[in-house]
Length: 329
Image (cartoon, rainbow, N blue to C red; front, side):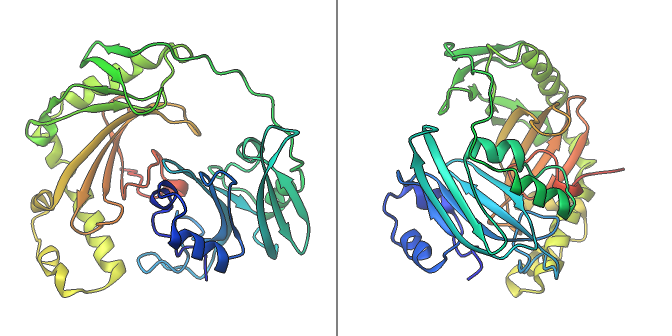
């Protein structure tokens, strides 16, 4: 087993006492479930540059890195571990001393006990690290709770945009959803905007930046979409090349005019959020279901000035790890 056998861990976590997840945990020793059944941890090999297995049929690689995957029913993160260690055990328990989950990661070389907050603080995977740096970071884990700024409570039930009006509090306390808006970029298809991870009592500049991002996107027309044809077409063709010929995809192989690619995508969601790891800018993610990448779909990412900066599968991230899907021209 590789640890990649679970295809949709969030869905498995939502189904309490899921049989498939239980069977996976019995067979794969480098996976562990929190006592409340709401968090899943997996140590496994990753592609050296992408968020997938090195054995992925679309992006195979002889090289790999070792990461700790962390799932809840609605989110997913992964953290780089030392690649040269021989891991043999992963366990999760509730630690009364820290009032949080304690995570034990064991290898032949060393064993460390840590927690989610410390992992986020010391093992973040958005900046490539040398092997020696990864080993030093892992050795420093000691199950301490990093000092964190206390989060201001969110008391608002709505926020207001100068461009699209009122957005109401949604499924999570820091998510906000607008009324349907006509999207010129999509030939006036109506879609909601969802602002995510926004605390109006902490990020005082966010709405001004979000309004600039939304305004520049809303000014786009079908002519602007035509300028993206080649990027979306290339995303499709690269995917088809990677998986190899399948007769069921013949209609996609037959596309000769990049403009036709839009016949095979369906708009799904618009998200506006602040990028949390690198430049901390506000970006807009336009996501689609598409006929070539039916599992992960497609996303177009626009920066605050309205420039298209990324075309990729919908991996939930704004900027591509080590340039994946980023547009440089």
